[in-house]
Image (cartoon, rainbow, N blue to C red):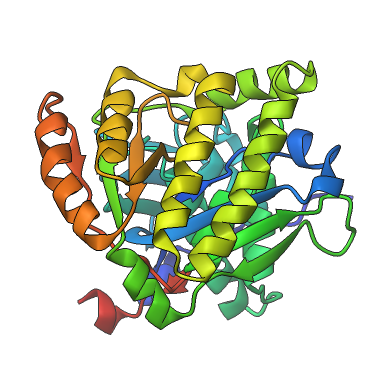
Length: 362
């Protein structure tokens, strides 16, 4: 049987360019969303908390020459364009070529814009993939093909990224990008119906309050999470760090309870406890800059941790509003040691992935 003919969508996009956006995230309890961690220890309720931020990544689909696909980004100097039959799935834009191949489209340019730093540990690549799946699905549905829901978008984007990275990816980044808000995720990969249970921690009005209790900074050093995750998985599977991971998971569940009740002091202490364990089981995640920022946060009575896999990227702090405001001044001084380091002015984003109308985009 021959393959279905690829669909040229340049005329469709010429009439109706598609734009979508999704939020990035900060987290606690990351790595438990990787199957190698969560599946063997499902009985301990492996959990991750993440907080969506209004540092959004957008994807725009534009018309391009028939038979070709182009990917470009405002964060990269170069773009890539190939004939649709020979797009590489292992380039810097490989996941986007793979997603376009999944939908069997050609004759388009996919343009990525991000308001967060690149490779900053905020789940940026997964966020962009979620926005891309949403955009491609809009075209798919407008052409009379099967519509998808939020869960479909999550699974397509996650399964593609996980497949292209040798099974070293978790599900939390896509979850935050799809649903927004602040959520506790319990991972249940043995369940045929769903791989997770999502518990929203705070309603929208409480999310606004929490925004005043957090501070987010970019250290100025990029990181690549897949390399770090590989080391963590190897040590976990060998049993060298497993007890520490289990202890950290207990703390993450306590953190969820304290965030839900608005007990910011106890929540910040939970963050301190998790970081103390992480320093023992994941020392490669802590750069000198990260150590300085975390220690300064604790000096002010705030908890702080790296976002994502650490080893550079971003950090976030949690504490009483007065302490966070004082910490911000101190973090600015520390971040000045790195030319690229900066405070990321942001708040919790209650919205997940969405299509942006022409009126909204200006």
